[in-house]
Length: 240
Ligand code: ADP
Ligand code: MG
Image (cartoon, rainbow, N blue to C red):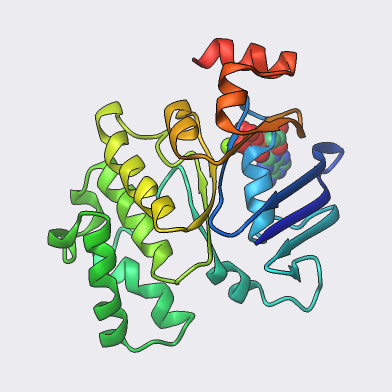
């Protein structure tokens, strides 16, 4: 589903990604952990063309994103992304937020888009919130709307960038539950997270990034119980 070869990304003279290789298979859940500033968000953003890469190649289902002929909107509808800050449109209801992409980008009729949105609202546990505005929702509910909005585009891959980091602790569980359900249904996912419990339980593989490099990559049990790289050991000793 995803293949990244020797990915480099610089902002001016600041090289943030220094040769990343990554492969994600269909239905795989890969969790990315690592200190702040290590390039985790930049890596995710390169996977759906929110950033232009400086060097190397990114393939999504075999299509090379660095090809100038690539259709950005088409790629973004295949690769959904959920951010730390939910970025909902405040002047639109929950239902309008969810149906905007399908209507505008996929040219689906309003009634079809709304019909498709209802099971998504149910999936994220917010069937009763279709007609409210985001301001009346908790952070956790907003994030679940953001997940439903992403799913409305029918993505093949979902990227999550610290989806629970901005939430009050008691709201984290509901969001993680939605993500866990998605993983169970076989969604291919890349999840940047500080939730080590989630990475351990739901992740098939964990990648530890530091200073723009993949320092270590393994199944969760090995990363968390027996990390090999001293940097991984140091990081985990601080967060676990
Ligand atoms: P992480 O998500 O692991 O905390 P980021 O990918 O956000 O790391 O950032 C890695 C580095 O890239 C940081 O030093 C950050 O300042 C820099 N960076 C990220 N986005 C930009 C940008 N748009 N312009 C300039 N520098 C950026
Ligand atoms: Mg980040």
